[in-house]
Image 1 (cartoon, one colour):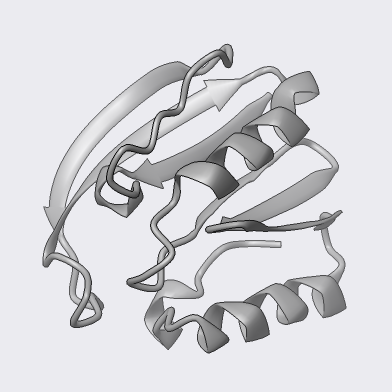
Image 2 (image 1 turned 180 degrees about the vertical axis):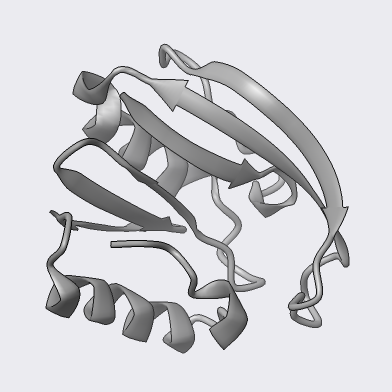
Length: 122
């Protein structure tokens, strides 16, 4: 089962995420202490779950929906794989592959994601 968190404010204008068997499991709103100048200080967190077999489709859909500016990404995982998704870019690797996780973090820094937000678990 895929489990992940999507920051609602990370969606680009006009971004639509549909046609996937996503289940919303929780919604919270909180202040973040690590927002960039391009990010709002309060985020709406959408906790989602979906069957593992839609992971690739979910990653592709998110890559088309996330805002390219502001240092946004979304991460989620299956039992065996990790997905870290940016606007128009997907990193997919086996859980525990530290080198692959480091490559995704390096890319994240290059698009403006601040260090405190690079907290996904491999």
